[in-house]
Image: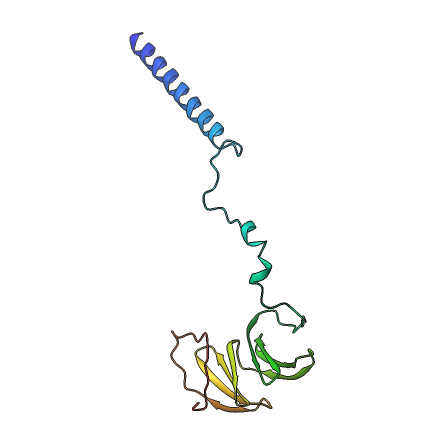
Length: 155
């Protein structure tokens, strides 16, 4: 009889502890009682910009038709936009002048002296202003990723 009484007391205490844990967990997870997120992404402070800090404004908007635009360069009053296995060359009014088909997805583009340098995967391809392949630099290795190109008279 004493043994059964001890088991009953133990089970009652265990039941009370389980109920207390469940109630405590329920109460603490309520959205209106939880602590605010210290890492909340809030950009409200950046929505209003002092007009004196704005030096440029958008004058035109061009639709280039890329699902994944990757790079842009401006040279000799032409805009070179790279993405989706091609580079589109447009004039300042937005008219398409040329569309260069590429063997891969471009990462960056640079234009200098009528020469177009395009990084595709881990190498650089060089095209003339008409879009003809002029040179293909040796691969830099499978672990390389070209993110920018700078060209000068010596290149």
